[in-house]
Length: 161
Image (cartoon, rainbow, N blue to C red; front, top):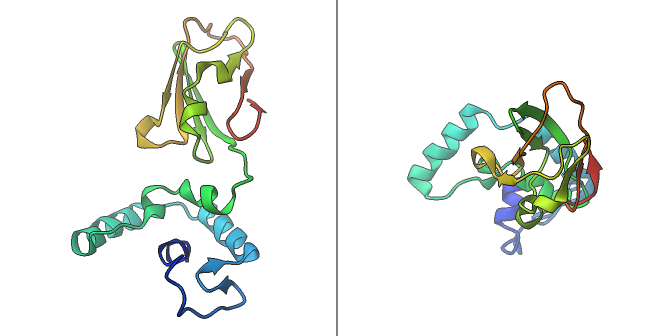
């Protein structure tokens, strides 16, 4: 339904409406339901394979299979990114968010501040594993066994992790 809504957004003059849609537009309650399902039923290998197979014949792709983060950008525009996973490394921190991060904000080192002597990162890699909801922050010094607090600014909303 999300794909059909986006694909036919300006070509829906012949579409009917229902209790869930107004032509190709998803009504708010239905978009929220579809988004909740989207979060619980993540993209599977089977869906990726089907998307790849369809491309060989139709030469188009379902963007929500390739970029599941697009759903929040279209139907949950007020939703701030939440941290899903933090993985500390030697002088680095991998952060996986629930949604796409703006590229300008994500690569701006000054948008990240670490207390307890961690300071700002010296480098930010945005789009780790070709996923624009993932970052890798590199620091000059982080000490094992030290508890740090990280403040992230300008990523849709201020958050502390």
